Image 1 (tube, helix red, strand yellow):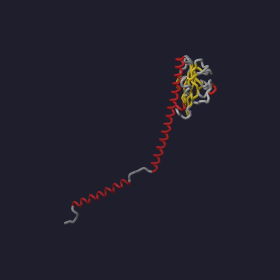
Image 2 (cartoon, rainbow, N blue to C red):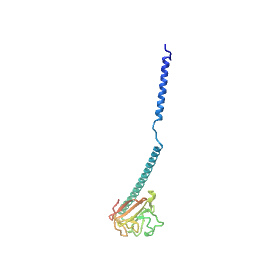
Image 3 (cartoon, helix red, strand yellow):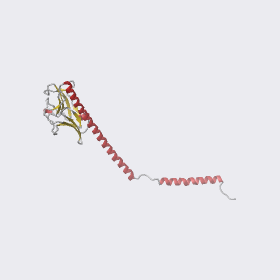
Image 4 (cartoon, rainbow, N blue to C red):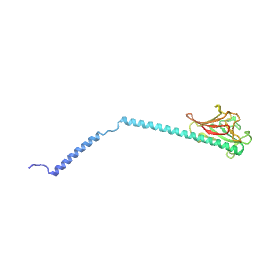
Length: 211
């Protein structure tokens, strides 16, 4: 009669042996599992850095454009309100650049670059008072309202010559005028760093539009 382990013990041994073989195969498979090399990780990190830089630059560009459009909307709205007020009140209004200095009466001292004030006159421009006498000449500071680097503006005639009186006027009929007699249209350019700019055009009829 053959000697050996009881059948139950043989099955347990076979099961244990099979389990050991399976564990060995699993360990071999895990050791052979592909992973990321140092070069691959470095390439991914560089790619993420590049995409981040591009995203930040695009975000900054978008902010600059939005603030520039905000400045255009601010000035355009003020010009149109000036024209309406000039017609309604039967008086002259002017958009005055704070860089005018002694070129206007009363003189502006100290200079207020990149700022403007709205004034009115009941004697065809001989004397000027703030549009709102209760608040004085409230200077609008574009750089403070829309803090873009280099935010500013300039006023020129159709030949590109700066207006020496630094102003745009509307008479009681709503027509645009200027004592320098510039060639129309007058162009008001709002500029930021990087030569990003938008323009507002003022026709002799008093019509204003953003370009």
